[in-house]
Image (tube, rainbow, N blue to C red; front, side, top):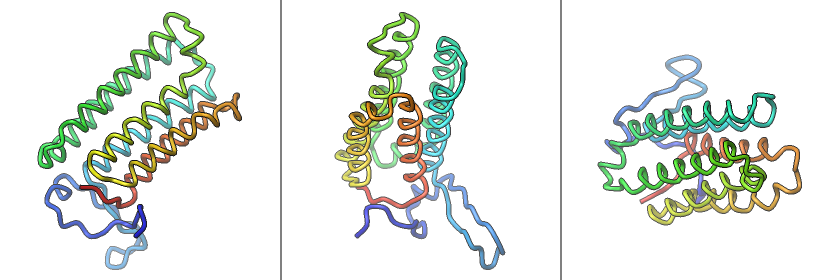
Length: 196
């Protein structure tokens, strides 16, 4: 069986709560028909935020201090939105640790990033992409093991193995990091992946 599959019909009441149905084409015979659960919506929100943050870091001349403020505010907003979207899911499944764990990882990453920018720490600034890939790898790995989700474990490995490849693209580290992180999130939202 494939780790990622096309989405199946929804039957789980937990997933039906707050679902958004998406259809393109003739309503009786759409050429695309899918849905986004609240978990999918949270993943999409993070995917969009991650794409914006790393694209601006790669291509914009916006100064680092301004970016630190903007991305900290945006990230805290997405933490709040994704917490609200996934609260029913984690509560019903009695897995609050997932939400708390990811929130702790993101807030820790923001604190280290902001410290590096405001203090001008070359060590941190040179390794921002590695930092966020490592945070993602840890989050995916622990969550994947905790809920027995091979797809998340795989994504944890992908994020971890991307870290050494950053040296191969020294001028495009933010583009590579943002692509890996956001595409992974969009993939998780678009496809079905098994978990406990």
